Image: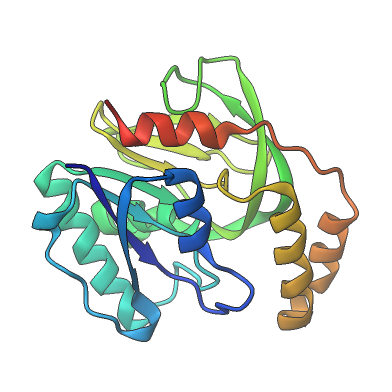
Length: 227
């Protein structure tokens, strides 16, 4: 029976609630969630078939204590052959855990708001090469130069590694947040304006920009869940 474990990395839980967001799209699929920043214990992975690594307001280039806990779970899941999906911080965590910290860095151009992602390599998770999808993004860090075992599936104008997959295994990272719908994206940006005054200018610019979401989440979840 399929069962997913969600590694929740949210910091400001009244504003950002990734577990609820993913569960809405997973529908009736059985799931459990662990909030790692709070130090909640991680259950044995033997009871799960799928792993979701959520976004986080934390920076992947730091070394918070819970990062290595999460990295160890990612490595264990990959070794077990589980289906793994990382989003935003979770995407970056896949690179850090499976490739090394040298493969993540501060982004030269952070992305806030709704961005156009160009598919560069065919994959059922994201589409055919030449396709383009719009989705919400909110990140100040990025994956850089993933090893050859990783196939880069999509990019944006500001981010060279927007979607990636480990060989042909069911392990994917997405820099964007396809699970965050338009209204939720606006509420998230509005909440962050007060929390991060040093980033307020960029956040307000994103709020003033165009809102566009092509609904990539349905394809993403369908392929991640698998047959």
